Image (tube, rainbow, N blue to C red; front, side, top):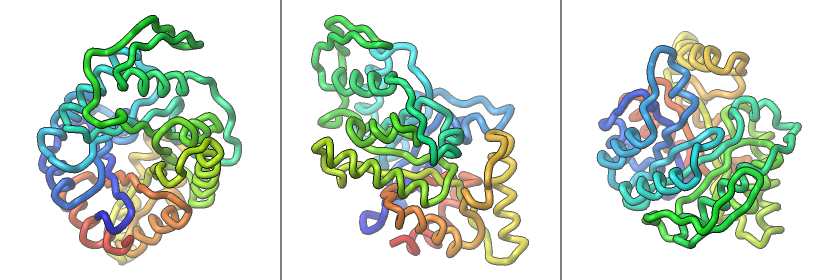
Length: 305
């Protein structure tokens, strides 16, 4: 899929599905993302698998697709987290990406027009991870972390460390994406206009900071259910998504924030965000099975190239 946009997949963490991972790898999808939100907590009664188990299973089942893990909130120890992610990058032979967010993504998605400022914990986290992954001995005194000649025993397989993506639309999130991180993720809520504002802000901020705006990956989370063009089929696709989102997020504008129905309409919805400046779409397939994946690959992706 190198001749089109990056197409990523967000997959459930409540079970290991090696056949799905392998199919996505063979079809040429860009990345598999394992999150602590979305599917993982959306289905009540199902226990989320731990991050290491899910990523290890995916690494063993695949050879080229990138593997992403998204973390919300704060890790217990920056040293243990830096070590864990470095080991996972080695296990996947340099295919790991890391997403960080300080707040719940849907809440941020609704506040596109406000962008309230949040604290500096996320900045400290990214700064320290990058320094620890470099192999340097780190001394740091901040508002949230204090280290004295600290280091980790392993280094990531990727030269330059693991790519870090910041998710969210707060002023701090977009500023960090522009000046410190390697990419940005617009949450599942919102429309192309809001994503376009974020993309423009980040590209301008990167240029002012002396960074190459084209080097940053700009992502968008989209829930997707493909079905046929008949009215009942489109309604069926919508109804596959709506209960999941409303049970987890509460109020959620399914009709304006999700792609569902025939392949042409799903592709048009995604295209709206690509035209807004998004370079990577991160699709939550509902359901996340191989049959649905094949429809995405054969019927939707060709319309995006």
